[in-house]
Length: 410
Image 1 (cartoon, rainbow, N blue to C red):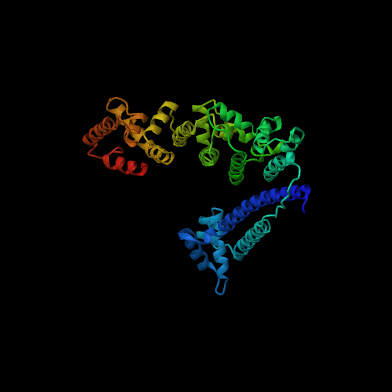
Image 2: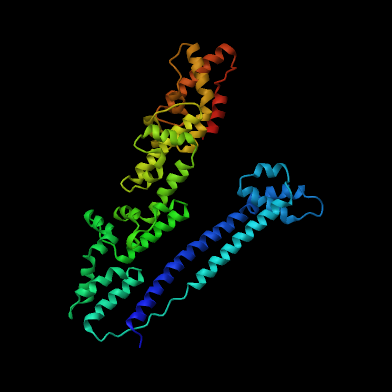
């Protein structure tokens, strides 16, 4: 018959196996993505174009695999232009082949680990002859599966002959180590949310960690401390932040701000001084800041950055107004680039004919389809007609020219 000590060791081993399996599965997914990335340039229209150009540049009898490698390596590192102009030699093919081989080996290793940790460990059954220990044994076994057996062990001294598992669970949740480990539950209750079970709580932590690791966030955001606690996650759990919302917050910060043109960051700090430019990620991940509000500010900053990039200026009120009308970052960039010559010519003509000024705001109204678009269009047409009347229709602000500019702005 197995002893309780043997059972405890088996439970600890099973908990370790599950942790190792989760880590191996994450490693496997990352390795598979890396392998696909290494090969992506050899597929699709862009990769095929590079491949054909490279193939044409290979001396007779050359290695076709080298051309395929050039396509993959070029697309991966953004060298399409160089690849289309010149074939750089078979070393490119060799390099991509070696890269692909390394990624495949990493995937094979990760797959092997998944197989290694895939089989559950047999947990021996122990029949306790002491009634006062049976409830404790059950609770201990449950928490050892979570790797938290140390939270239960202090309860052994509190056991009486008639203590049930339910009573022990209540006692456990009143201990200071338990309250510290699952601290976010108290905050949830204070907000009118239900407390999460231990399994739900730990699963959320694992999901948060996987997202942060997958997007390359610093380990300081998810490092485990005493009792396996990840303090940075407590605010997410307390704020009822789902893994999907967390991922959206990370993407908003990284793709739309951290990796954006510098003008976007400049506009963000100019418009919203409370956002520390050196810690945009932390601001975006703060659940006290509503996701909708964060997106509103980021969109306004993108619009402001687009204006700056075109050599124009705007303020937070105007940027937020454009955002409410559905102007996106891409549309703002195209629109402001098209607006520059129109604004300059409009100012010249309004000054020359002593009309009311044709301003950036006037051009924005028409280019972005805002409330004042009809009036802005009428003003532009009046200036055009005045110039046409004097110069026989030769104008830098003609309807055709503006139509072409507007077409490029949408």
